[in-house]
Length: 292
Image (cartoon, rainbow, N blue to C red; front, top):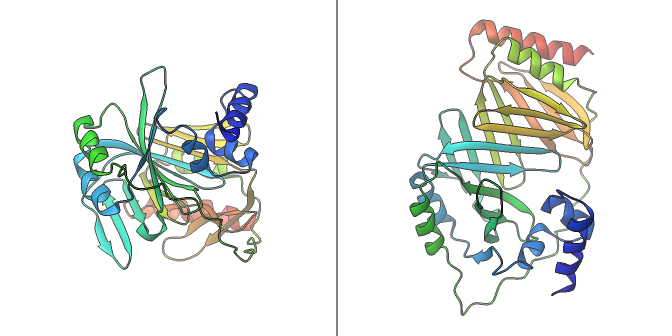
């Protein structure tokens, strides 16, 4: 057993329910580096063939698409449409859903199978050059598992090719965190839900941006985490890494949530399908944020 695998195992034994991203942070390695310690134990390396992956997505029926950043997790059940390739990005736009992928950010891919009381959790997971997770696609009950198996075969790692090592994270100039103001985000979400305003809720990292569009229903607070737990859509926001929020004005004003480390955690606005009355109510909600 490798030293890293042993350290990870000890950490999981001491912290029940520890997620792999948090374990990687505590161990000072990337998430993909931890997955490599499980090769042939529910994990396989996959070839990075974004063309084959994107071409196969519309044939998988309904899968769960997950992206996250330092603060937010965005999980959306979706039947992918055909993607549109433009200016170095691939965009998928369906009913209540948008996803934009920057293929050049993807350097590593894995198949991951995790044990679960309801049955194995099977996913394709994509990472940047340093091994940071960018996008995870889960084949759950409503997926076409035969099509998923065909995709895995298309992405099989060649046995005669050595695995690609993870690069060091690129040195980046520190990005100043915007001077956001404190936001009672739970009140904002509950006000939008009370009026059944269809919102566009976006979360992005440096490789993928994913949006959910529709009214919010079930909003639940769990310690520092604010959650939307709706059918086919889960959103989890840890408010500890936030510096606050700001309102971007315009015809479709947005509430932008800022990371204290710099960058965006998430953004919300009334969706284009909102009525004129709902748009006015949304502007009123954001005016309270701007003046608080």
